[in-house]
Length: 451
Image (cartoon, rainbow, N blue to C red):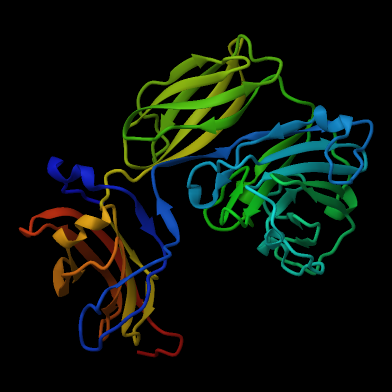
């Protein structure tokens, strides 16, 4: 996206959102009357989320009682993780979520805790098995035995103990497993035992690595988050975290946080845990979209019992990766990877409701989202043009912006097969371009089009 932003307007940006375009049309016009969108899908704010890490299941000689209390001695020795990232990589949730992992020769045990503001009965209700527990405040556990990245199993429990399960998307797969849920005023807990027979496999050996993800459907916060956040759906085994069976590692990272990510110098904060923190350093390398390092790596010594800070410099807008390598005695003892998303350069976001259209379709829904304060919208216009091969075919102007999240319907009737460009320009009262955005659409043959 190209930016034409003067210093005089740089203070206008607040946030940008992207989602599905709304409706509203006026026949025979290139652009329909725009309307305000009240509930956009996704906040495009500068964010960071963990996309690669390794979890650990600790072997226990005595299985915990599945009663929803998480007070067995074994849980105190379990590996735990508290950093949950929101879907669509919208940063880390501030809710006090956590997941703990144990195993023995019979089952994998997972203990989950989800923070709430205050318990209320509407957070979850009793449902039959496979009756939609995910619609309530719930935890979802996904397990991929052997790390196949293809075959996986899903186990869901809501805050009152109702369950849903399946193999991949097959909800008819109903294996035997145990779960108990219990709530207090400020949190609820789920204690889960998944026998290996339910995973159609045998007990793992020490050092084996499986795929796993633990997800929270937070009904009160109206958010979804997981240990490894996802773009759209939790059902993505290629993106699951790794879980190694054995014991707690000498050093691992948790509680990731940041004040704000900007294009330039930043600081990432986290806690280093485990018995081997002393003498371990972290090396932070920023990787661009092409996988190449953006500048020199930065190093910092891990802080035991406190918060470690490591600097990093983001040189590009868009998506980049922050690779964290844990080093001790010259050897790598752990790797984490975080996705950094920077939208700071864009005041205008242009989103077609879809990309492919049949030749006989007459209109498309278009979302125009602005990083402007609502009170200054009357000072701006949005000019929209439909082009092909650099030639302007149609154009129009939204003279009055009803909201920072605006929807309109565009006339695409009579277009020939091919690829087209939609360009939008944010202009001020004097007609000066402040920012520009573009998107492409394809006109394709319909299922019964023989032309």
